Length: 118
Image 1: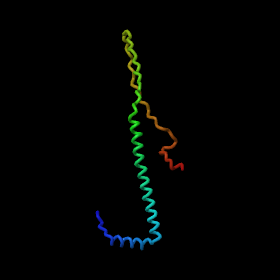
Image 2: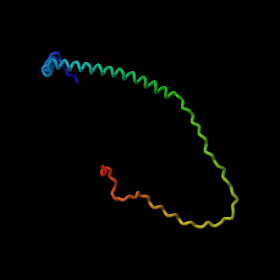
Image 3: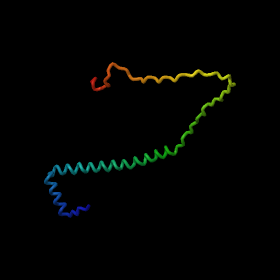
Image 4: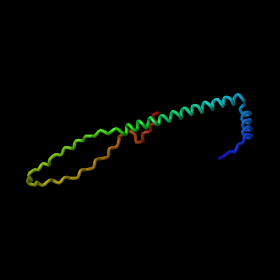
């Protein structure tokens, strides 16, 4: 995307800008633009050094060996063997009735609306 601006076109553009903004305002715009560029360059230089510091810290973290975790095996009880006693008939149990669902009880049947109290 070449604009192909020659010296004549640049002079015309500068004259138009000077007429639009005026001499005093144009000087202020140039000054503020210069400050902005200077601050931008300083910040980009500062960012380059931060990356190197982070890489060193990351490398140190990666190089550290992890401490071994000691786990105790779960205690296993020996199965107890009992002499087979005379088999007694077990009374048949009736299946338990399922518990009734627990719903919050309240005086209102309407859902709670937090905006109502405000």
